[in-house]
Image (cartoon, rainbow, N blue to C red; front, side, top):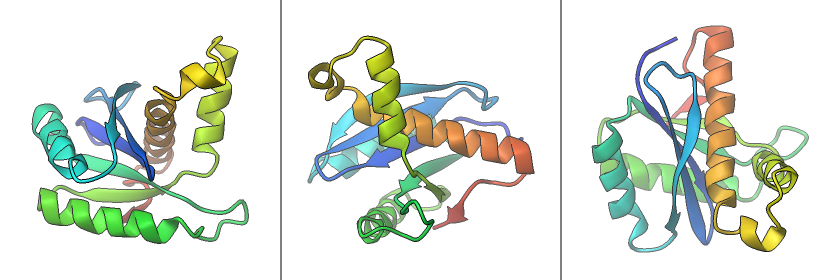
Length: 148
């Protein structure tokens, strides 16, 4: 397992959930929800400067059958924009199937109503994406997903 902080990103049309992990890759935790739009890239650049991650882990939507969903093209464009804005920082695309559904279920189990979930659901989905990537790396000894 490589040492270093990673940032997990759940890129949505309206909001971008951001999560981080400790340098040992043991614990993923929510960071913030960034409004999508013109101010998103500068805010993500600021978070990268603050956390100094070894890589970004960006959720890639796939269907239950494993093929890329319609939204995957949007994520690939966002990944290219991040690549241009962040330079050499590695970006990995990882399968995010059901991450938002799992996050919603966990928040519901914790007593958050659907209305109260809106503020944190994207962060919780980013945590789920990052946890999945960390588990994959622990299991295989290789960086997760595909490089951008």
